[in-house]
Image (cartoon, rainbow, N blue to C red; front, side, top):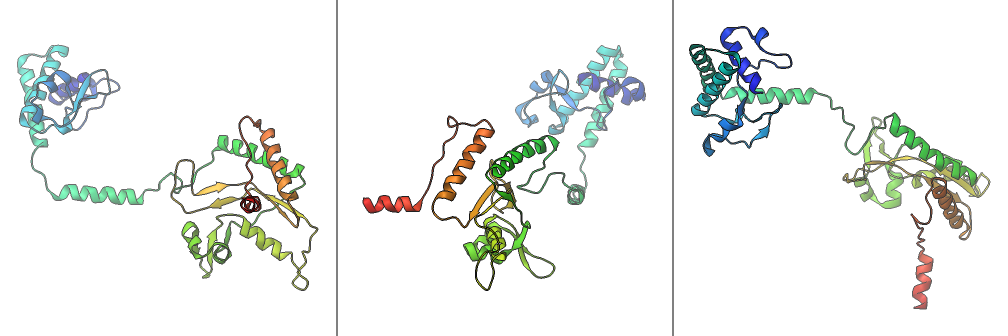
Length: 312
């Protein structure tokens, strides 16, 4: 950076910027950009407000934008002139001309400006930001690039292999459901956690926060209204890997969209269904190399809790 300062000062006087500025450097509108460490330490504490930071090159400097006094400008001009004379063999007369040019430019940069200009600049930047399109996905969501997509596909294939081996059939439902379907299950307060809105036809809809209501709706479609029987062979053994949405505060490891593996059984009496589902879970963990040393299964049952309380 010191080399850039010196050459920029000489170029400003001699008018040969294209020849003097080395490859990899650019002549900035303001001739000086950085102050050497020795010069910055010579200043009184009130003359600078920024801590020393590493420069882009090997030297250490402080941003000249944080320096405002005329004394600092003179120090910078003198430093640049000395650096120029040492590196390029410039005489004292030319050195004074360099210092004078830099001091004048520094004074001009400190001259009063129209107070309306900063406001106009801020408004222009604000309009530009408003017009720009962010490349980030919406809050709480994520992109799946090919590498992540391969990992997701591998995991989902394991879900499907295990479910199919237990004779489950895959199903799916629209990601868009009616709000009343969830209000009937959990009450109106559930809408605070949903991506719900009114569509252009006036219907109240939402991105599904879970799959169970959709499953119940589909099973009821199979029911004969005359007899109440299911027009399908029981038990129903269905599985799905839906993408679900919840408008909640995003946290580490918890976003507003998620995928979940569902295995549902309809029309089975007793605990046979639970036992089969637990067996499927164990089979899945084993298929991906996870054993009882890494995970354990805990069963929660209200009936067991009730029986324990009765005996107590």
